[in-house]
Image 1 (cartoon, helix red, strand yellow):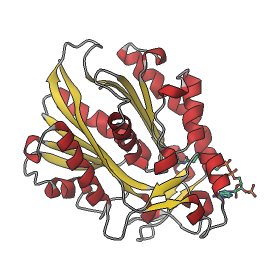
Image 2: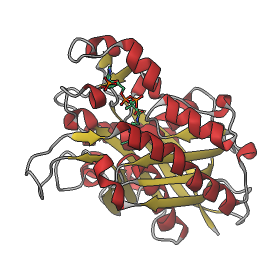
Image 3: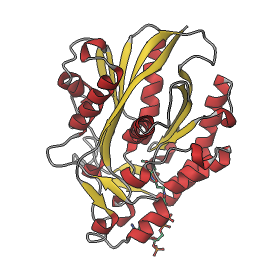
Length: 323
Ligand code: ACO
């Protein structure tokens, strides 16, 4: 049976860093409030000439370098994003062109903060059914462009960035000892629209709009539901929390992450946390965290890694990967 094996990863962050103290000069907030409620101390913000596709292309190039591959080796590009450069063409096709890839297919996938998990699961279906041989799976965002910078309840939470992995179809034994994506569990429930949404778009105001959020409602739902898809992903692959080497959750805030890990019985020292430095980068947060933990030597070949996320919709999911 074919498996989708991770053969490289990379990431990209804008050079500009904005600290909590700098935000406190713009809105009525404080470093103390932001750190205590979210764990965030700083975030990267895109320069005017940086976009989701330029950040995504940089991360994708780094992932290809890490894999020792070039654009000619890729026949599928999936970019998870909610902040595309344009309504169309897709960000994925722009990244494809920037990398000089002229073969295969490229498309965007929109599941907000859960986008990267949905994209990994989607790419896995292509690779394990012979629909593609090597995929670039990218999460890239510039949420700074959809924030209401006057709204202290949301503007302090987010940052910009991109991350990418290369997945390659390889023959496995079909057992849980195989490297690659071992299982995934995806869910959506559109009844929760009003808790987290953007108040613009072509079909409403005709403008890009701003992110709106009922923070407490999102918090409650996140801690309550994300553990279900994680348990499902463990069960499908025949593993449990005690087997896990690394828990790499969507980086929305430290309290959601720690509450979820505690509920699952995952020790805190197995949790990869980057929200302190990156803020919430939506679909980019998991590949940014994966790349951080891979490059600092935490994630090693053969490690069992659980990724999970919840975002607007709501949409949420988890995937178990043997690196
Ligand atoms: N600085 C100072 N005070 C603030 C700020 C701020 N930046 N933001 C809100 N406050 C105030 C509020 O106005 C409120 O004041 P009041 O009591 O006088 O009305 C007080 O702080 C408490 O506000 P709450 O919203 O009750 O604070 P809470 O403890 O719920 O924390 C937070 C807010 C951090 C947003 C929390 O609800 C949360 O983490 N929610 C999840 C949000 C999230 O992570 N969303 C993204 C996930 S999905 C995705 O990634 C797209």
